[in-house]
Length: 248
Image (cartoon, rainbow, N blue to C red):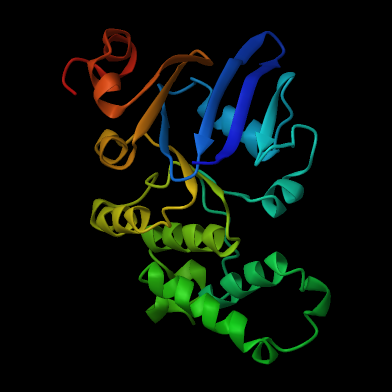
């Protein structure tokens, strides 16, 4: 399996607060990695450094062999990295399919031709519809995202990320705020993600984590406390004491 993401000794401080402490790990093609830890462990700050929202104080990020540490978010997207956020970032008044189409335009470098009607790009229209169908959202193609249930909005976010054809997909708490009734749809969408991409998921829902992940990294106070298979993490006494408790 080819190495897609290589995170090397990322370190980040905000004043006197040491948020990320020399964190290292790798993602290979097909990996399903869960990043877990208590609130304040530094999970989102770490993902922000990987995706380019924040620059690390020290350390490096390699994406498909390229050192992207000092490069922009847009460059990382073009190099094969996509992410979703803890809070939805969709355009509320845009129709669902139009948002997917805009992502496809960006991917194909066609944003300079947006004066032309989308009808002149039938292949992109069909691809957008196929992506929505894959996430069970084709029936809502003409719906404004503000009129969707919250769980459906999360599915649209995942569809947008997938439209970029990423090699590495970062999902920041996809279940956050999602009603229990919509959870099964999100789980099904996660299970249906292409097997050739690597997925890193931040999630507090331990049922989802232990069902989805083939590997788990545990952060505590900004540092890696444990890194292993779900069974290894479940049995790790340090993890149980720091995060899982004795009931998991």
